[in-house]
Image 1: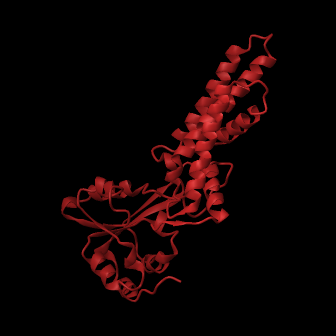
Image 2 (image 1 turned 45 degrees about the vertical axis):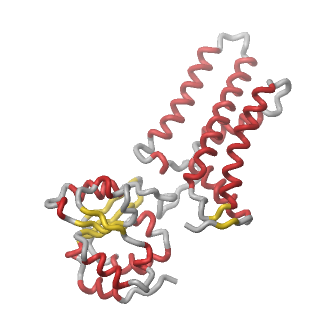
Image 3 (image 1 turned 135 degrees about the vertical axis):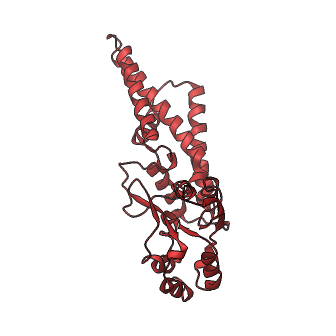
Amino acid sequence: SQFAVDLNSAGFLSLIATILRRTTPLTWLGVLLCSLSLWERGRARERNILFALLWTTAAAFILMFGVARGRNSPHYLLCSYLALNLLAGLGWFYFAQQIEKRFAAIKFQRILYIGLLFLLSLQAWSAASAFPYYFTYQNPLYGRDKNFPLFPYGEGLELAGQYLSDLPNAKDSTALVYYARGCFSYFYTGETARFKPYYADGAHTQDLLDSIKSADYLVVYYAAQGQDGKYANYLKALSGVKPLREIWLNGYQYAIVYQTDKIPASVFDALANLKPAQ
């Protein structure tokens, strides 16, 4: 993707929304508790410095990639996630300290430790529930897109690769795949050809037809291509073809596998006359 500087606030807001959507409710609440601790009197200087460093780290990556168009994908914010989770941990620790002070006359420590262990277990379960695709986690309080997952990274393509590898003569076959490198090719025993984005622009139909006809299988990564308008007419042309396999994860359709010799001539005619998506 191309790089450009954009000072529009929409860039920052979209990254903040992404972080809110990909962090757990416990992280939200922990960060809030950490923020409340800033008003406590007599806080240690070292803790002030630690809080400042973590807040600066979280904010710096949001600001930096909020202005860097073309470099604003969620994986660029991983340091912000780490900083926010550390802040959340400190926030819960501060909360536990306040509870312990209030109930100092009661032997409350054991219950407090059990409560913190329970919170830690809930946080770990939130990650485990997304296994093995941890980056697909979505905060249940934020809401869920009904049609497409949030910024797919190739999840499910390895399942398509494994499925095709189990078919007869897999080693002698070729698959034309979107997101071919790594996501699919590491799991497929045959030859992997890369579906290039310009194939579907309406100006390179011959390249598209040649690539499909030279392959045994066509793998559409619907989770990503379905969200990109430039593939709309391409996917519409293929919509009447019966798939060899569909890959679904968490209620989303991720990948569609077609056997190219089963694609009707009428579909190839439609692809030959593909128009640029508006």
